Image (cartoon, rainbow, N blue to C red; front, side, top):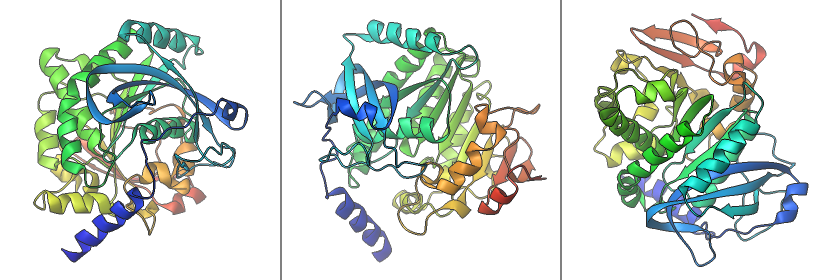
Length: 373
């Protein structure tokens, strides 16, 4: 119990260092770093500054933002200080366009999709996790596009997280509150005409993704496997039994379906204890527990940092980013083999019925295409 409270204390201490809801905009940053555009749908209420805080809104709000990735960012952790504008060192907002309604948002999203080269008209939809501010989620969306050199258009769903370590219960409730909004956004994106929609959910955002896809399947069977080109759950803060029960509502899961796990995820270890020692999907070690599901579990434990929560190794480990960025599976945005699993990812593979587990190691950087069966 002492270790649990020490972990919480460190989280609170870090969170108390700055107002993470504060957003400063610097148009000149677009000429300093690498500029990106991101479309955002959010259920957060606006603050007096015109940006978005932690309170829940009744209806979706839609914006497009410009973000500058600093020239000193070469893959890994996001550097960002809300109170400081220093685009040469930190991720920075360059501009914001507010859309009057969802129709205006959809029109501009469709235009942006069709501005892309044929074959690159994909949409990456990122759904953030627990303890995230508006800026946290947007910057993570852009970082994934930048670090993994992904083609297409970036879209972010910003649900009303408390953006505080002690806001876990509020965030769990907000996940349920935000399901209808995410369904609306998914249907809008599909109507905009992309080649593929890739959905990435992190932490509690994975629960939101699963809950939303489940309710879509109840209303419109086969919608998700027909409209989604891939689903990735990163460090999912989701009970394994709940995940299996949710999956029963799908006629077919979207393919490929990838789950990134780490046994060194301290945040999920804490979540397991808080939730009555129920195992979280993001620290799953035995693929036989979900053997009947056509999913690929990617174990990135060996890339976890020795310090910090270890809750987003996929986006914070420069070595892992380098390994995945150089693999053909990522460069083709989740290439599939004949069995519907992610193909050509390097690692040690274990297949149990329908599920496949891949174990990645930094040693694979010496032989990034070496797949051991």
